[in-house]
Length: 290
Length: 339
Image (cartoon, rainbow over all chains, first blue to last red):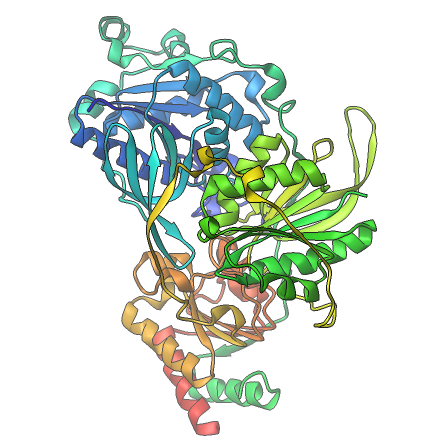
């Protein structure tokens, strides 16, 4: 079976481990200091695609990301791990998009890719944690969605069976193709980069990168189509500017506040016996415990 | 006037806590706006739903009751809800930020091309000034949510598209019974064949396993929580012993769960449960924002940590500086003695 699989991926700031180097003096976060990474659950999605390709070697995996030029980094990372093609959807018109405008742009790009059997993406991205873009892309494409997928159980030309997480349990669901699956972190972790692929595909570049100063592999890339990452603009995907970016976003950010926890006056104790005894004594006498 | 609509999530015929919490919040928002509060339930055998929603302030209950709707699948619920929203024109639609709500809400918002804010921690009513047009819009829904791993809190508005939609996490808003048990509102039963088509039924559940929750973390008055600093699964056992002694429950940070010390159903924090117990004993927890956002409203916070400068100490009422392996057995020991 020859499957066309599209994986949606996002480059995100690593919000999980905000270290001291990423903190400003006032306790707020310095976003620019956070490393940009492949969104973790999108890697789980890529792994599902790679497993499908292993079982169906004729298949093709296209990774699609929307973002600034530097987001091409995660396309290369996907190629190292086994994807076949990378597309960067980039345009100033996409800037400031909320999830609805993002899903419109991604769906337009998927339509431009053409035939697909399965669209895979992470359940949510760690910078926003909304889990909205997957279902919204599915709706925009008018295909069914199955979210919180842990595992693809089986597949034939027409139907797929997947296992998904539900509140306090799991569910097995059968659905027709084409469809969109969002994959959660309980799914298999993504395999690492393959050394041979890394050597080959670190030369892969978008047209913008090829044209930039310091790109050293022009000879290789002109001879090897697989190294050419695609770069699509709004016009390339026949998108409607009114549905993209800020103007296509019904939600507006009214206010953003940095989280600064109000400090309390704490009572301090050491691990010494007398200290712990006196703490327990106080907690019992003021009825905190007991 | 345009009402507020709350989607009631069902476990069989029992309305989920998160939905009752949303009805409670919806009631206060509706009073603020001077509009009605409607609830919608989609499922099978829903006779018992009405009596559950009236005490929390619903004026109207829309029912889609059919044997084929016993278990949630996306499209039948999305189609029924989209059509209902088009008919009723609510100004606000609220859903739980659960697996179901987070599957359903974006599908609906995309169909209606309306703005949706996920995983809100507060909902308020207020005005909005459009800086571009200078227009001032009154009585909008403010959807307040953490973002960026909990490091910022954003207030989102949806000035021009209706309905304004939000999902809200379980346990974040209090449940308020505002009416007596014998209050009865208006029930509207909808014929499902006018809302749900065969094309909506292409996804089929073939197997389903649900385990009842093993812990009462959400309602426990005392929570003993452990972080990565607990060091091992064996050390985590001490927390179970302490929690048992205090009639509390054990919680954990994501880092502790990732390290295999505890299980996912015990996760407290932005991507886990939000708890507000009377007493929160944080053991070996440094205090990442993600975790603190799930427990900061606890009554008394006690931190046990070898690092005197652990961020969590800043919000703790009592700080014990010492190794957890040493301090926790002493806490257990001296508590047993004093008691």
